Length: 380
Image (cartoon, rainbow, N blue to C red; front, top):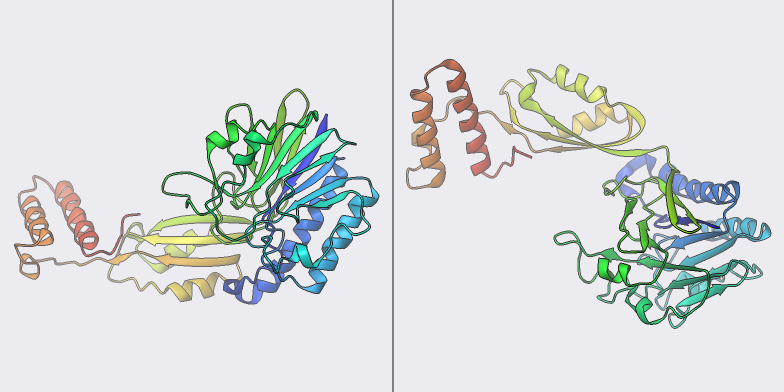
């Protein structure tokens, strides 16, 4: 059996400018997440740690960050634990790459970096493992990072693993110049496991006989890194006769989206009580406000963020609500426009309604319909 720890997209040095005063705190959290992964690699008695791209947020990390990484790598090397690092899109193998300026394997026999674009595999005889990776040489490319595996998997090693930093192609979600990976490429790779990087939410893209997972970012990097089980994880991969992938938690923080319909509340006090139910210092809350707002309400997005800033690690309010118009008249909307025809149709339904419940429903439909036709997007 072989045990692998798979991580990536750590983005050390990310600015977090939108986090304001908490930016430095979150940058330190990224460093702590890497140290925790090293500790978990040791604790779980793993054979090798794979870092599938974007260890750094750019090719210009600070001197202190570089030294911390070297120190942590040395810790693993001294325990005879192997580490393999592949450049990603943020820390790509360009002319000014950090991996060309710094030698992270200097004096460390168990550390390997894919810092030569012409070298696409590394054999680890002690583990009977061959590891394939094609270093990203730019931020964008239409070239698949794993298609080459179909013609270059001749090694007779017991364990055949790959790292790839790119975007699984899903219609409407993936760009074709984002180092594209198809499910067909995964199934034809001949690999037992592909350690994917680039997407910040941990998720499974296994296909055919090949297991393939995005590890996601082990700490919260960008506030809306959704998908799969989300951010804050790393992977433990055990290979015997089959491949077992076990995500484990690294970060204590969570990104949570909360949809709040203001039409259900009669005052700001009740709205605040509903938001307060989510209060947690480890939550990054994306609050989506929608619906038709009663005229007696005054919703101030910035005030809500200020009032709840100390109750969450971070809160971002998106206000897509619309003010309810109590009296909508036909004369306000020309008859030759779609919105004018809609108003007249709904007014007729309201006037001919058989009971008060139906009248209320038709009036609500009128309010929502007018708001939507005016482009206010109150329905989300």
